[in-house]
Image (cartoon, rainbow, N blue to C red; front, side, top):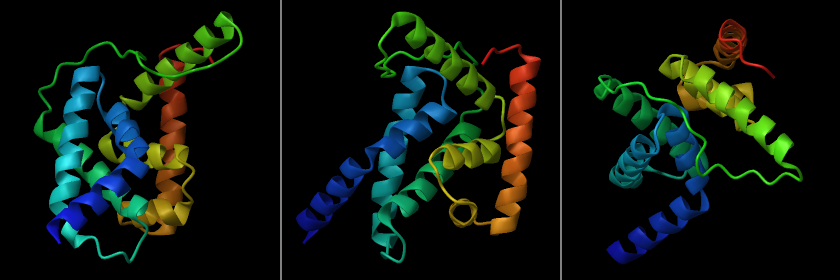
Length: 170
């Protein structure tokens, strides 16, 4: 029985592993920190897997566990020093190198700006960028659809202000 649970868990995590990478990248600057958070999220997912009842999609449950883990992990390790953000390992396949460099710079600026947001705002932007509806964002964060809509709009405005203030070019 235990082997079946482990196998089922690993299959589900493997199908949705992109969530882990995206959350880690959103909350941590360096590759090492991202890997640490990735491992922490895997541990938390496994610890809470028995609480997954199937009343929502696995991916929805996984988003919620991962975001909560990232927020807790980030707060717990708030003495973490800020370092330069890098896009090493980011996969971009464009036809010319100039376009590739331009897109990489834009992504770098976006992630740098996102790192200036608070934890909840990061979660809102992450879910928005993942294409979640306002109702799904609210469900994942435990707030109403209307509250999710208002908070997301405020966060998008704040993100635009950060980008302008820092002189990032898009």
